[in-house]
Structures are given as C-alpha cells and as structure tokens.
Length: 229
Ligand SMILES: *Cc1c(COP(=O)(O)O)cnc(C)c1O
Image (cartoon, rainbow, N blue to C red; front, side, top):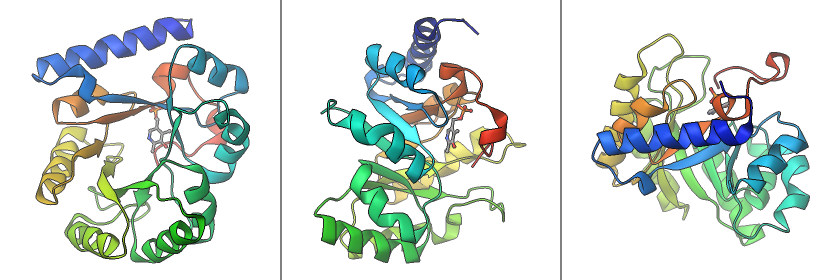
C-alpha cells in the first residue's frame, strides 16, 4: 500500500474507474465514501484537503466530536452513518447526518420520523439488509425488506436505497447481487456496497456508493473497532 494518502486515493480512484468502465458504467455514477471512523484529525484534514467530501462514520457520538465544528466551514460535506443506530440516538443522528444507511427495524422508523418532525430535518435513508441472515449482525432479513420500506415510506421517511455488509467468510458477489435485486424490486437507485477488500466486485454489480476505510487511511487500531459491522 502506498505510504502517502494522496497516492492511496489516486490508486483507489483509478481502480473504481476501471471497475466501472469494465461494467460499462459511468465512473461518475459511483461515489467514494471515505470511512473516517477512528482516524486522527490530521488524517481527516488531509482527506478534506484532497477534496473528499463524503464521509462514513459508524458511531454517532464519535462523529459528533469529529464533525460538528468542521461542518460549519464545509457546506458541501455529506456525512453518512454506516453503523448501527439505537433509537435513543435517533435525534442526534438526524441532527448530524445527511444520510443514515442503517435503518433496519420498525422501531427505528418511529424514532426517526419523530426526530425529523421535531428537528425539521430529514436525512435520506438506506435500509441495511442482512443478506447472510447472520444472527449477530444488524440488518433486516431479505424477506422483510419490502415491508420495512413500505412502512418507512408510509411514515413519511425518504428511503433511497439499500446497504449491505456481506458475511466475512463468504463470496460477496452473491450478496451484492441479492441487494441489487431487492433494490430494483422496490424502485430504489442507491446501493451502498463494497469495502476495501471487495469494492471492485460491488461496482460490477451496481454499487453507487463504496465505503472504503483501511485501503484509504491505512489500517485502523484494531482495538478500537469491531471489524465488520
Ligand atoms: C469500517 C467499515 C467500512 C470500511 O471498512 P474497510 O474494510 O476498512 O474499508 C465499511 N462499512 C462499514 C459499515 C464499516 O463499519
């Protein structure tokens, strides 16, 4: 892996573009979400200096600390919550994030709708799907996706897509393909799938947002973060 942030970024952008072209897709249709969780301020500043504006965070409180002040000077910043959301944090999440990628249960619909009403702010939403039906993992089971989306829409929420973290020990392609099918069936255009190890495959299967952390920033301190979801 290149030592300089800028070189790592160029490399990832090149690989994203090549994967899009190989799939006859417009490279501009795929957004790089820089996963900045646990990164020190200097790394964030470097990413901002390089023009990155779309960031993924997996914890509400950590994201507040990191972004509340910075965001005042960054009108085009887009913050995306990619980690599990507890309903008692829904208000904080609605106040900070532009996109919440982890809607995965009916209880959260009520909490997000109430927070949106009281704050006058409505983040766009993705529904996280547990395509591997792993008991320990967040996400709605594939069979319950359609009804959760319908319920969220009925509550006035803006669902624009789906998100997945495939099982760590399985071929991700089948999970990406399933996510794309579930999205198409529900008329959803946004697909958040693909991480450092599998983003090219995700782009081939239709990803509009790839979430890249370690390939961009370098390895995280493993003591601080649960690895996949
Ligand atoms: C940490 C994280 C990522 C980034 O993972 P890398 O393998 O470091 O690219 C992507 N998505 C989610 C939900 C994460 O928590």
